[in-house]
Image 1 (tube, one colour):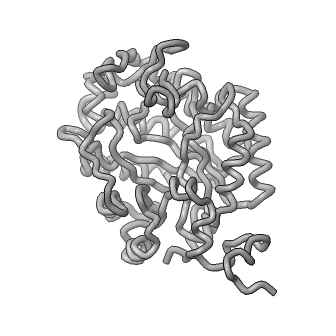
Image 2: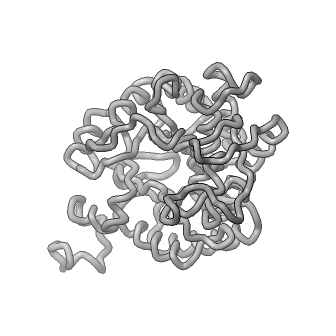
Length: 354
């Protein structure tokens, strides 16, 4: 089943493995650098059927760190265009861009500097659904007013517009991992009492407005995906019932796939990542409530025998895999049919070469 082709919009994916977006914190002024060329050229040759480029900020304020990718000005757009042309010249598979706003997780150090804790110098004031801190040692964000919310919605649209002009095949909207849209969705973080807070319907409003406006911008052949929070793994946080409610609303807006993730609204939750395919159960519950939308997940999916079983039993359609490709970008070659291996590499994998 892993190698069974599947249609995504106007694309026929050659298998069910998708490269999950993975932040590299290696940009300069938001633009991709030589690191991205080397890193992404490895990934696009991995045998996966689609590549999603890392979380990219929709505004300067929406960055996590000073070295995040961003796509909100002409220079960044020009530099991304060069990168996409380069990648497509190597292997022409669908390439999507994950777009996001960090909210209160922004103004942070690089993950390998001071554990990614808040900046002391060159910091900026973050914005969120409420003025609640991410953690006790984090600064208080600004509570977004209605005009600021409208501006954020426009910023998502603007980045989506630029991404399509650049040559991306689709957009993935980041609604998970504790970033801004997740901060509106989660009752852990959102204590508003206006039209953007309170009931699950109101907490979903921003995510649906962003999705609706971006969907209007996309032509019929462009992919629209969502990184969705299945659960906060906390008492009184987002529940599976809430995530099913949102998934159904997103389906009505015409999204093409949903990737189920979880956790991240605060630094420490009850999420247990110490077993294979730990999000498949919640993904299956969401998938049962949707039709005509591809549903996948992420998190320790590299056991291909187990993955094959989960796909065969229709618990998920797509597997979004990241970190195993960082360890060895060629690991799939040893498991999938030789047709995925570049002809130049076949002799290294004991394949019969004419």
